[in-house]
Amino acid sequence: MSDLKIAVILGSTRPGRNGKAVADWVVDRSGARTGAEYELIDLADYPLPHLDEALPPAMGQYQGEHTKTWAAKIAEFDGYIFVTPEYNHSTSGVLKNAIDYLYGEWNNKAAAFVSYGSLGGARAIEHLRAVASELQLAHVRQQLSFSLLTDFENFSVFKPGAHHDTAATTLFDQLESWTRALKTVRA
Image (cartoon, rainbow, N blue to C red):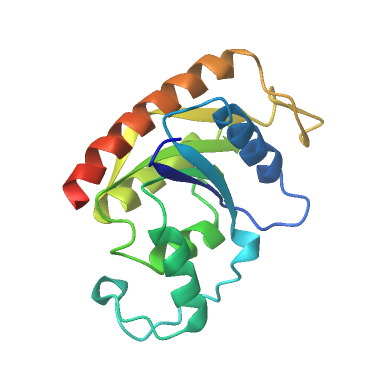
């Protein structure tokens, strides 16, 4: 078993969300991997109010129990796959809020992005790339983008095309490589 731990963070809490099926697909594909251990983190299990910490997250002086719980969970991981919907040309508010709560827990780790939406969620990923850079969270080139038009039946039943499997393998390979390299930076 690998010493690398990677979280698959489900970035939607919306009722009837499509993201759960997408995140489950990512976790299922990671099951055959030996380079890292993957774990699903559902933001629905971490109900964070709008950012309510008095001090900037970069100070690491969290006051709220919900923040401390979230920080402890995120700190367990060496890398992340963010699964995001695209809402209004960006990521979901709940995912952005969860990311904004922390700082040091993200630093010098690796990230990959999986999105879904009418245009595959590409614009959500572009916004997340800028946020990740500010958090010193290195992001890999490969991404997965699922179209509501072609990868979902009736816009709600996830049925991705087989071509996504090859892209997923590349995403996992890149993420595990960068995650391992950045672990040495944190040592």
